[in-house]
Every structure is written in C-alpha cells, then in structure tokens.
Amino acid sequence: MLSEPRSGRLAAWGNALLAGLVSPDDAVLAVVGEDAVHRVEGLPGEPAPVGLTLALGRLRALGVTGLRVALPVPGHPLGLSGPPEFNARALEVEEAVVCEGAALGLVPEVREAGPEGDVHVEVVWHCLPVREAPPADVPSLGEAEREMAEALREATEVLTRLDVAGSGPVAEAAIDAYRARAAASRGLEVLAPGYPPRAVRVLELAQRVGALVALAGGGGHGGAVSASEMAARAVALRPVERTARRAQVAAYNSVVEARGV
Image (cartoon, rainbow, N blue to C red; front, top):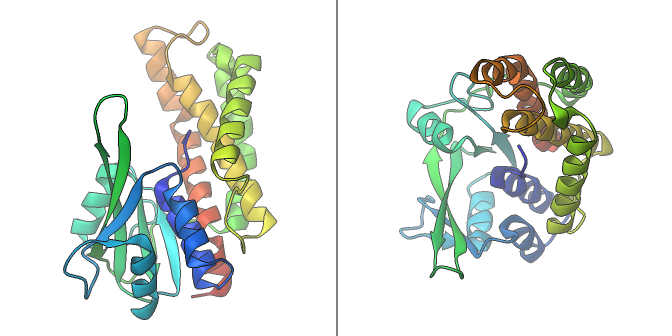
C-alpha cells in the first residue's frame, strides 16, 4: 500500500487515453514512471512482446473501452472474475488490470536487469483471457468513501490501543514524506485526467490508511513488539487493510463505472 500499484497507473492513464484526454506518449510516460521499459506479451495478433504504446492501440482496436484494477490477496479476490488461471497469476503478484469490452486481462511481471549499482526495472505485462463477469467485491465510490472515513478512525484507535508509536507524530511524518515522494514521482498527478475529485480524495485516503497499516506492521514501533502483540496488530488491522484496498480499486475504476461501460 505504500506505493502506487503499477496496475493503478496503467488503468488510470489507459482510461484517460481511451477517453481522448491524453496523448499516447503522455499516457505511456506516466505508466512507465521510473521503470526502464514496459512491454506486453501475449496480445492477440502479436506473436512477440510489443511496446506499451502499440499495445494500448491494439487493445482499443480489439474493442477495449475501459480498464479496471484488481488488487487481490489470498482469501480476497478483489476485482477478479476468473478464470482460475488468470486469478492465480494475479494473486501471485496481488494486482492486475481487467479490460472492459474485450475478455482480456493484464498481469505485471517485474524484472530487474543490469549490473550491481546500475540496476533498472523492466515490466512485462502478460495478456491473458478473462471471464466476462462482475468483478468480486468492488464497492461504489460513495460506499468506499464512507468506509474509508470509518477505517481511518478504526486504524487510529487500534494503533493507540496497541501502544504503537507510529500512530502519532512519527507516523504522520512518515506518511507526509511518502505522499510527497509519491506526488513528485507522478508529476503531482494523483490520478489521470478525467477522474472526479471524489476519486482523488478516496485514493489519497486509502493510501493514507494503507501507510498506517504498513507502519503498524513493522517492528520497533511502540510497546507492542512481542510476537503475540504483533499478531494482535495484524488481526486488528486486517479489516482496515481490506477496506483500504477496496477503496483503491473503487477509485481507479470510478471512471469506468461512471461511463457504464
């Protein structure tokens, strides 16, 4: 949760491109970010991996009208609709993009290359068939916003009860630093053009809650450092983390929902 999922960037900027709000070059630049290169493998009609610009154009030609995000974890197939092969691959990396208008999905594989000290990241998106069915457990944007407000209160209460120092100024400073880095790396764009302000609010709140959960999961914060107390943190915060992931998916998928595609 402390970093924006690559699937989120691809869906957000891909949706902006499909809506004609950004150029292909701008969309690809935003999706790639600090990575060296992104390629798509297994795209129908393409016998070899292709660049992201060509892939997005090919997806449009194949009838894709929108891109949705899935952020599944074991026991919670958030945003997935099958088949099992696609779900298993998405669960392995805990993210995926599902196309609307064509029964296709994209799962990222991150590879590091280069000598020590000069390592660069390459991403291969594996294009696979998906089942055309409603995605699992994705709330509306309004539902997600209400859930996140409650989740933030719960997270603060849980961290305070468990005597986690990260629930105070230390956590606030860490979260502020994270948000500053994230904003800078995205060129101050929280979401791509075309997303409503409400989606931006929900995503920012989800990332904030995710940051709190991640800080609580680390060792050395406050008095709760024994194995049993660490387990208690995890159990107490699991529903909060689940809510934050649901909200992220709702934010990224909001423009697709609004268009009713």
